[in-house]
Length: 201
Image 1: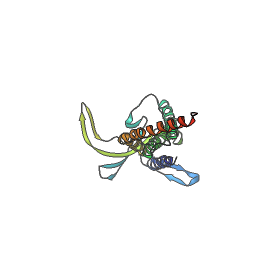
Image 2: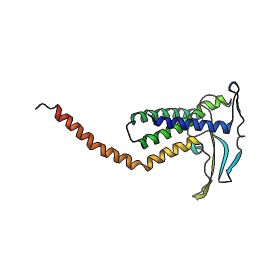
Image 3: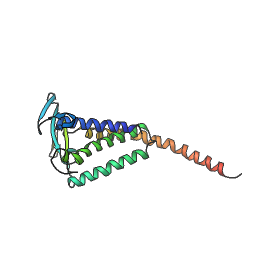
Image 4: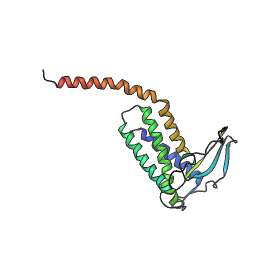
């Protein structure tokens, strides 16, 4: 399954950018990256795009369901489920498999933070790490029924990959269904021919 190369690329890119933001020290490899202070922000394209280092203990957009261990366990099960589903759908259209690969890459990227970061950075135990977010984008003002949004939620490459994967599924959903409908008559015809050929004359 070549689409897993996409998954691997997403995971590696996600982790490298997080290490650059949070910082990492591996003395025996001569690696010492200081990173950014927590809560600090660096302008990239003025106020429109900034690098803002925050840590998210919950799900995307700061949503918290259950405890950290429950969330990490759920992420592990979900990632494994997506991988198995991708294997089962290995003969489906490339776009469909690519969307699953993006979702899987994003899920694994954030899962690494939750499982290992607490221990790696001496902040907590296994399965209790926080997800590193840093992409801070300006957003048009929304004020509906008491809900106000001025800047988009700070996110990372893993979050973006999951979002892209889901959007691909939504956008190309009709083409997936169409492919299935086109294959069904062919499969039915093949089965009928096989039945006829096996029936004694």
